[in-house]
Amino acid sequence: MPSYQVFLTPQARLMLHAITDRRIRNMIARRIDGLTKEPAKKGKALVAELIGFRSLRVARYRVLYKVEEGRVIIVAVGIRREGDTKDIYARAKKILKLKLIEIPIDRQEEA
Image (cartoon, rainbow, N blue to C red; front, side):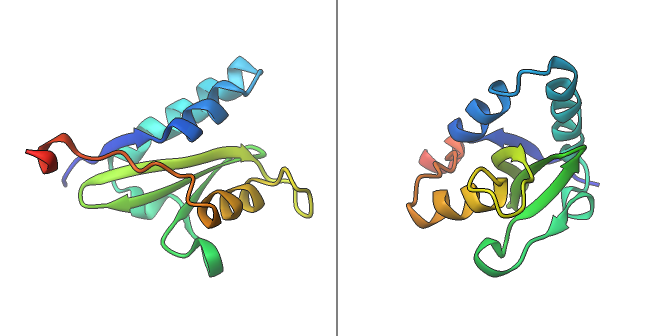
């Protein structure tokens, strides 16, 4: 079973560090670390504008990520607030629409 590399986009890193409850932040970090093995089986596949992404549930928080070519890219971390503009899915759709997500480039591809 291959091991995946996990990358956080700068936006996801900021979202994670913005969580003030250290216990929740550590719980999310542990779940993110768990994505190194079989990430496609851990989260829920998303649909519509977020097709191709998966959502990992950690209490009220969601970790949105994409699995591609041996790596997992965490694109957003936040609370699920249905109908609220701060809802993580609404924020992720807006970030994708504005093309603000910076996908990390594998250094080996540049060579």
